[in-house]
Image: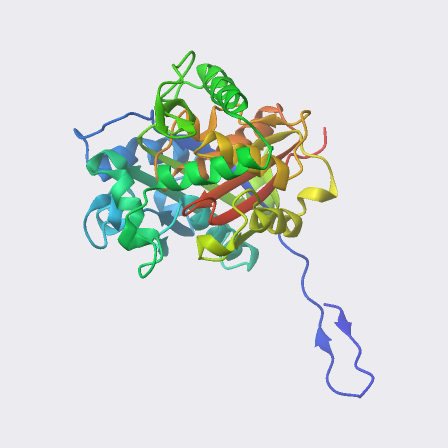
Amino acid sequence: MSATPDPAGTPPVPAAPPAREVAVVAFAQSRHTRDSAEVSEAELLLPVLQDVLGQAGLRAGEIDFTCSGSSDYLAGRAFSFTMALDSVGAWPPIAESHVEMDGAWALYEAWVKLLTGDADTALVYAYGKSSSGEVRDVLTRQLDPYYVAPLWPDPVALAALQAQALIDAGATDEAALAGVAARSRADAAANPYAQLTGSVPHGPYAVRPLHTGDCPPVTDGAAAVILAAGDTARRLCDRPAWIRGMDHRTEAHGLGVRDLTDSPSARLAAERAGVFERPVDTAELHAPFTSQEVILRRALRLDDGVRINPSGGALAANPMMATGLLRIGEAAQRIRRGDSRRALAHATSGPCLQQNLVAVLEGDPR
């Protein structure tokens, strides 16, 4: 191992080892539906986990680290993720972690774990059953508890406030937003897992200026990804989707101190992840509302040459806590199929794009 000489004669500091390569080697998801009341969370997850493990040719006992994302607020009970662990299996014991966030943040934790060398493989999964309650009411619980939450503004009302600010700034109009919705659901027609596809009526106003067609569907669903490092990834997969960079940032918590027409945290995360070093040809954006796609395209400098949400994105299926992980999985699938050379995947959480995670994925040169 090389070392950095110290002019003062103190013991040299060992040089940092080269960063490990980490890739997505398998991805699976459920068929997303409006209501899955007939199955439990564990039953929703089980076929997804079997699928993703089968793609990688691994058994659960061969995974070094498992990390999941979900929300007790959606499930309506504390420590609900422990029940979903039944789908992983009770034996053998596993090294496991959980985040009360979208599964994209669980993937971030697993990615860091593999970078440190503590694991060679990781299973990441996420799920959400929004049908269990009134999701618009549930999501008010993530607001500032003193000044905003007591007013009960739901996520659609807050997104409408953001959309109106964007229109007032001259960055878009209602017709352009309708175009985003139509394009997304037309693209989703080729996605067998999507919930809303094809020609979907734009509908009446949900909260002005957003129509029902500008808003995501209420969705139950799940997703899972397997990560692997270095030669293990090459052994498990013909064309790994290498994660070249990943970062996440947050906006100020107070909505009143933010410029709602911009997303500086998404831009900073993209910069730290290396997005702006070379052009991307695909972007899977976690934009639950049409107006938020406009904001993200501007913040992430995505021009008309970039394919946006070829899967249909969150406007076609929006399983809370799994939608961001889906964006990473869908981007990885395009890399693995050879449909994309360099792809951006984005995840968000909180009102009006509060937190943002950005990842860059690439395949080996052909």
